[in-house]
Amino acid sequence: MKKIFKKSYLFLGLIVFIWIIKDIDFIKLQEVTTTIQPVYYAIAAFLWLPIVFFKTYRWKKIMDTQKIYYSIKNAFLIYNSSSLLGLITPGKIGDFSKIAYLKKDNHSFGRAFLGSFLERVFDLLFVVVFSSVVVFFIPFIPRFSIDYYDLIKLTGLIIIFLGVFLTYFIFLKNNFF
Image 1: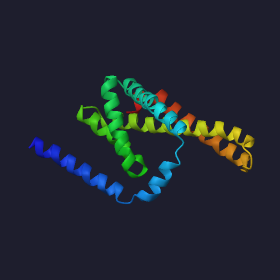
Image 2: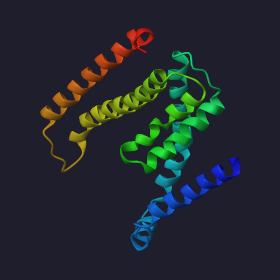
Image 3: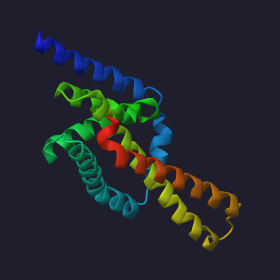
Image 4: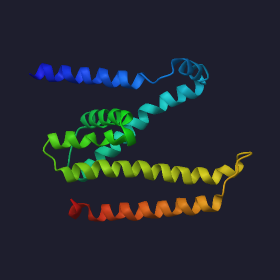
């Protein structure tokens, strides 16, 4: 029975793979591939692994704070399997599949959800902070126009909201779930 279940995963994976590649325009893909700058590609490929390890470590620390302990190897495997599922699901909802792994190990749904949710919030916070820093360098880019005042106000409001939201969870984490 276990063999059949494992083979059904392989079959499901094949169906998802076919579903993904059915809409690929291979001629356009070849055009785009030939325009890739090898230096930028090499830099991106070189930086990918440290970024993945940093995100895995961040998720592991969130789980450690909740007294859910995994080795770095298991955290890496859980995090990356859910990230791959997140790539093929709308809105990266597949990232929340970490909850299933944690539930399988008899951890509460609330803690598992909170860990995955906070990890997504930290990703969003990084994007907001990074974007805010970039906004201040945009005036130095030639031929770029934007209403900076409104963008800075919006960025500030988002940072304040996320700061209050994260502070609430950090100080009340033991009583929240």
